[in-house]
Image (cartoon, rainbow, N blue to C red; front, side, top):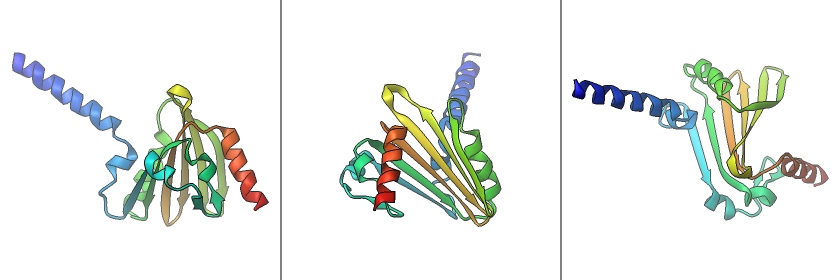
Length: 152
């Protein structure tokens, strides 16, 4: 009987641990899915990092990490499109844009220690991209970055 309880507890722990896996970890080695992880150390080595013409260098020191998932696997797209919508408790939808078959959703979650997590989900007919940005960044930082881009 003791062995049964130990086995049941271990099975429960394994089940809970699998739910804690992120979308990035679950699909990291899946064909047609690309995942990228950029650490705080790597971000600090890129003071003038530009992405699509936007210089994120000024806020790079405030970022803990950036994770990106891109999927072009047609069989997985329906599953992955539902996945980011069930992000869990604490996420607030900041913005939703639908334009010519492209859907963009931005979510935010406040973390301990003044940290914030932003999730950007871009869904198109041919693919899906999910970007997770974690760090001590504020909406003012994002606004400043966007305004600096408009001035350049």
